[in-house]
Amino acid sequence: MAKIRLMAKTTVDMETAFEDFIRFSKAKNLSVDTIDSYERRFKKFHFWYDGNIADITGNTILDYIEYQQNEGKVSLTTINTDLRHLRAILNYWATEHYCQPVKIRLLKVNEQIKETYTDDEISKLLKKPDVKKSSFREFRTWAMINFFIGTGCRVGTLINVKIGDIDWENGLIAYAHTKNKKAQFTPLSRQLAVVLRDYLKHRGGSSDELLFPTEENTKLLRTSVSHDVSKYNRDRGITKTSCHLFRHTFVKNWILEGGDILRLQKVIGHQTVQMVQHYSNLYGKDLKRGFEEFNLLSRLKVDKIKMA
Image 1 (cartoon, rainbow, N blue to C red):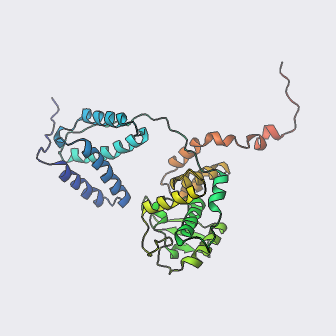
Image 2 (image 1 turned 60 degrees about the horizontal axis):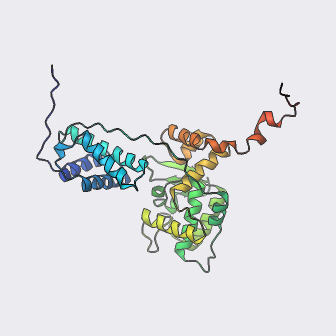
Image 3 (image 1 turned 45 degrees about the horizontal axis):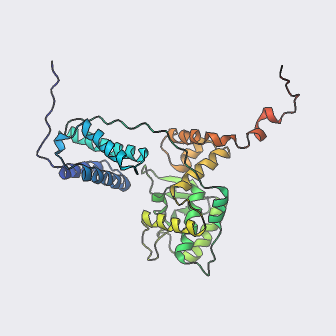
């Protein structure tokens, strides 16, 4: 018997269909960041495709991929991110019969190891600004960078931390806002505690206020954090400006110093150990550092084996 194909609702326009998808996503309690990401990717696709929603096929997606590749400035990783979001949208539309089911395959990508901050760069960034000469914004950025380096947290987590979330006595920081929406605690190192106490002498504030607010004591935007960190880094001669690179640097150093991946998973807030294992594999080349020093065979004083 021939397979019966459900006809798409040709009367639904893309904007209305996407509004339905967003309502569906909010009902699933997806994060604001995830919703924003869907909106950006849909806007990008809709700018390119202005046809009928019912006419979207696998060839449409292939044409979209070719369009992005021909742009020249779009990385394969970015294209795959767009495709993942588009796949979720189209899958929902297909269940609602707005369009026919469309299978989307991701591009094969040879992952490049991200260059992390060096010890020398970190030392320059952690040097405390002159409080008498620096602005609150610069001093706050210095404290934020210490926070990034000391915890490995995401920007979205940092901008939501409140002063009262810091448990000074037990050396813990509570994260109320995380990517997976689960409450999380991370250790507060002695050095970061010193930095934050110093920062709070100038910042002031009550326990229910944000730890890193704007000058008007409102919530910082992600873009503001990125802009401030970028300026701070460049002023110190550091060309790397990514906030997320601090997270990679934290993870890499944890692994190289022999930290176990199960504890790392809890500290950086991944739901599964697979992503943490991925980091371990990613920085595998760096594991050669100090190999001769710690390798048992190299350290033991034994007679050298002569080649026959």
